[in-house]
Amino acid sequence: MVSNLVFQSVSVDADVSVGTIHFPAGHIRASEWENLADCAEHEGDGAIYLTSLAQCHIRGISAATEVQPSATVVATPGHFVELATKLAGAVRREITIGLDAGDGAILSQRFDLAFLLVDASFHLHINGLPTHHAVAPDSVVTVAQELSQATELSMQPVAALCTPVAPVAISTLEKNPAPIGWLEHDGVVSLGAGIPSGRVEARLARFIAAIEADTTITPWNSLIIHDLHEGVAEQVVKVLAPMGLVFDANSPLLETPAL
Image (cartoon, rainbow, N blue to C red; front, top):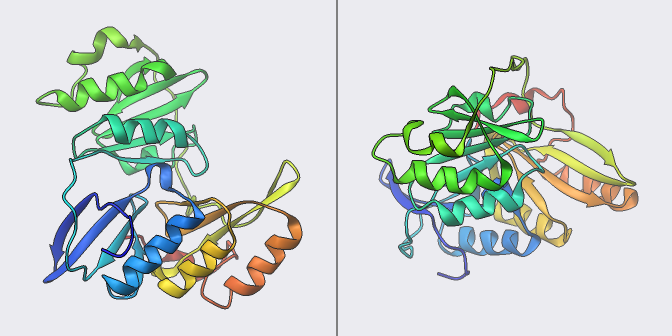
């Protein structure tokens, strides 16, 4: 291995070895894009593939270090990075966990466990269905751990840690929920970019790393480059748009489903 990346798992797809790398909440630092590029070039087929679980696949790897099973934690882009990291470290079972900031986009993917933020607590969903129970923010990791250790995912082992709540209505998604384009906030700009087919060539990954900004990959074949000054953001669009990133929310290229 030529980088310090850790594979979450390795599988075989159509006789090709595929390594999965998970970044909790999809949060990837600039240096990690360099590592991904190195791995794709020297251990894979030259590209990084994004998945609907906001993971990265490297295809064609020759070897990988075994690691303990861990949860895949997907979150509303730009939210819950610290909580997602804690969950991924604490839950040692191959289950999927969604953290939804309230719009239902993450919840709609029907994870094994999902936590929907409503007011000051998280409504718990199991196997895509509401339990009509809420969890305090500081109990989310404990609840997820308890559930992951049970034979079956059910309310029984965590009922004492939860509070009954009335059901809430979630709006139906009418379009791709990925944030795309120029996203201004607090005097800076974040850029939402679609990635057709979810394929990031190693060369593009190195250009993303050179921006020296934190990024978030989403479950919808897209990337958010966070907190840029306006002039830098303009230059990023000029350089990366010709390389295949899509900054137009109405582009038909965004309709390609994630892996």
